[in-house]
Image 1 (cartoon, helix red, strand yellow):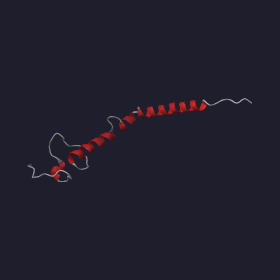
Image 2 (cartoon, helix red, strand yellow; image 1 turned 120 degrees about the vertical axis):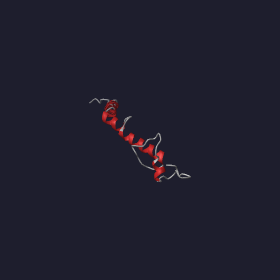
Image 3 (cartoon, rainbow, N blue to C red; image 1 turned 90 degrees about the vertical axis):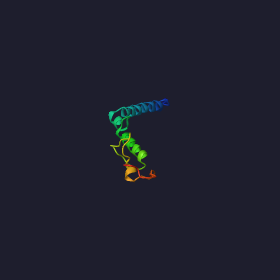
Image 4 (cartoon, rainbow, N blue to C red; image 1 turned 180 degrees about the vertical axis):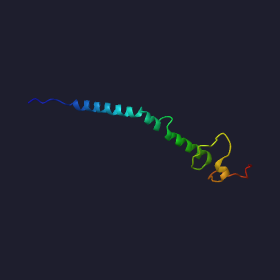
Length: 93
């Protein structure tokens, strides 16, 4: 009985398996659902951005969709709920 060499078979199987896995990953990454969830204009990162902007500006954790960052009333300054920013004197209203 003659023995057949099969040393290259496992390499071919691994290459085919890698091709299938890469194809599946690329299909998921290029799907509209994935881009909507974690893409450039995703809802997840938009929520993080708004929370970080509010927290950086006001010194407390929170989110306010109606904040005018160009001026106007500073929530934590007028409401006195800040941890870091304390006025030296009464701020004129």
